[in-house]
Length: 373
View 1 (tube, helix red, strand yellow):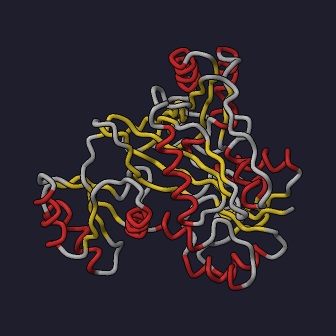
View 2 (cartoon, helix red, strand yellow):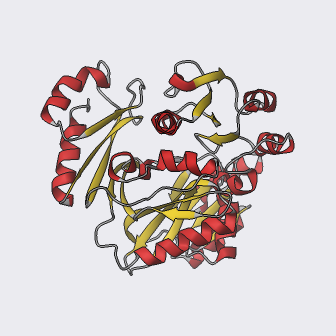
View 3 (cartoon, one colour):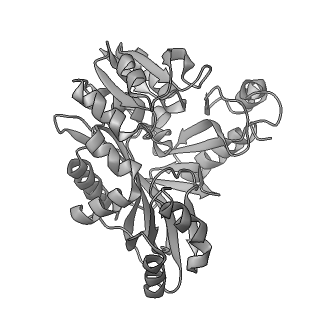
């Protein structure tokens, strides 16, 4: 079995150990030399070029992805050429375009914030008037880690984006500013034959638009787990996704759970599963795209906490900090993405597991602190 992964980032990198354990060959199309997944990079090229991607797909059993940025025409070319593509273009468009996603969530009856497409200033002005004078304007495509999102209280505050959209730039939408008390994520894996499994709901902690911590399972979430489980299964089936699907959610101050965004690949909110679940999201993604029976998502310990290493050391590499970090925290797992340090960049993560969430979080944070600037 040979899996081809388009994209050479850390998600592709973390598929490699799972592939080795399963005896699956993994091949990576990296965007440039020396990327995080260079260990398995068999080709380097532009994922936006159909000829490059089609050549890469020759000789693999299934094509999957490290990110959702492969253009629809390229995805369609793969399908038209007879390649197995998971997730396919019909599903991926809902992760690529937030307007498409919002419309599909409405069709499926999934709970979500009020929203509206914005094609001209009057659309935004009308929405603001109906929602207390404030809204969250988003670019429909291209945004990630807090980029492409802007809280506005007037049309003027979005004027540059409106003018850009009118000139052929990314389309826009506006959403209500949700009064949430925390952010959550529900991961589900689904294979082509229809089998689907969910992991426990997790709580994510964001700072400046970037996920910094994940607590698994989400504390005090027993009452809403059945709700998000049902939402995840409805969405996964409704969009026909194959592989891992992450549904980022808001838990509102009045107890509702609303869909925020979708990601159709292994996701930052599931990294804890490498050390905290019977089947990691990376192994599960490979099983799913190959249409193999899915593994157990049971917890290996009552609590798991993943802390991202953001930016990395001001000098040297993560491995330079290993002697101190590993000696001080022998019971915490360290994962490096083989990336150079840069402000705001995810260069690795640490995961601690145990019986008590507060104690586990303390250990994970203390270990991650060794790699701070």
